Every structure is written in structure tokens, then in C-alpha cells.
Length: 103
Image (cartoon, rainbow, N blue to C red; front, side, top):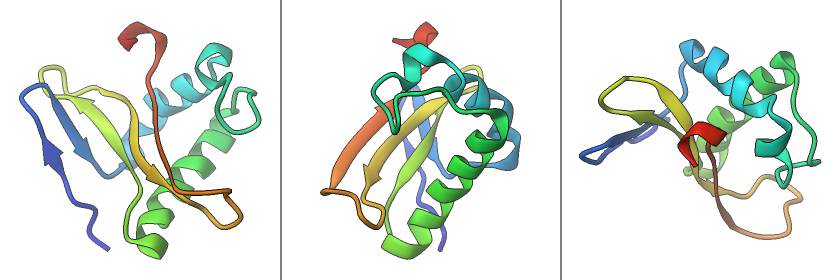
């Protein structure tokens, strides 16, 4: 499935790319960012990669999901935002994660 892209004056919401792993792993490795997400614990780089792959797969299986959020001016991937409902999840969720520097 082709993940749709949404553009705003400041942000681009797009599918994740392999090149996003450094920024994504840094965000997911921060205990404060991950405090209320998943198990509440930071993710290793390997688990961050698996999580990013799961987000991509969610689009294929459900037809919707989380976008990578890119700051238009810098081209930097700064977080994730979107809809989420993996198997066994208690309900449809709209969620987001941003590193501390963007909050």
C-alpha cells in the first residue's frame, strides 16, 4: 500500500523510510518520551527498528496508521503521529510521539 503524504506549511507527514532509523531510535530510546507509550520503557535501536517496521506494516494490514513527521524547513524526521489499532489493542487510538526538543 502506498502511504499517503500530508503536507502543511511547516510539516510533512509521510511514510517511514530506512533513513529515519537514527532519529527514530534516538526518540524511542528516551525514557521521558516513552514513559506513557507501550510498556513505558525506552526501546533499543533494534526494537525501534522493529517498531518502525510494525508501523509500516500496520498501513498494509489496516489501511491507516502512523506517519513519520518531518519538519519541512530542515528535512528532519521529528516524530510520529496517526491512527493505531494493532491486533489485541483495546480500541482505536490517535497517538503521537515527539522528542523533548519539539514539545
